[in-house]
Image (cartoon, rainbow, N blue to C red; front, top):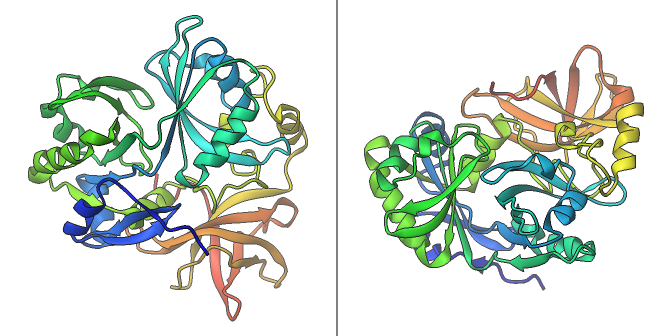
Length: 368
């Protein structure tokens, strides 16, 4: 018997707004309000507002905090100063990915380091147990997932919408930087210039008790700009157009970040960390499979798990993500192909099980 999906604190708000709710990563989540294509287009051209409060948040602080985070993640935490964030991943001992995450430096004072780690909802307990099992550094760990809400205000109009609500100069916050400020009457909001859409904007971390106020405040301020409540459906089409990986689809415990074209977050020269030697060897010798992108020449949308073949019919890989691109108006997908079988022509077949569909490899991201 499967565990019943949890309800977000804004569940009733989403239902009243007409959202279609579906179970995702252990939570009932809004998949769409007006429609995936409409919400996707709004984010690309104006702005969209996402409730992503299902994500997990850990605070790692005190003496040993930097050493712990440095050891369990692949990116170089030493490069982070207060007010900066970085994309990273938690590797396992085999070089696979326990999870991908964001690391925020809340304080870089010696012996008083404090980091916010933002992890995927379906991996909260798994990640907590993994990090805890490597905490020989004596760092203080606090799981703030249940107390923290997260809204993503995304799109080119995001700054214009948010600025009148705060004295923080949000337009001055650089990409992958953040500030902590007041929005309306709501104190201590982490205003982060990050996102999962590729259209700019902010992710706003707030205490759960203020989440409903922030949601309505933003929608009211954003109405003149065409701000649209947006759900998981458009979040997926937006991220895929920018070739952002989704854990459980494109990333998993058996896939290394180098295979996933995430070598840029693997800093093998930073010092010791989990699976460092494996990644160094992969860099030197190459990897056996590689993440690729493709556009369908047929009209059918590729799905996770479909088989990839060469034009001779040999199985050479599998599809991990696929969708109909609202911007490009063609079906697109990502997957893994064995590097030894990479077709020179770029022509591949995507098998549904009953039919082989024609597709063409292409450079990532799909949307520049």
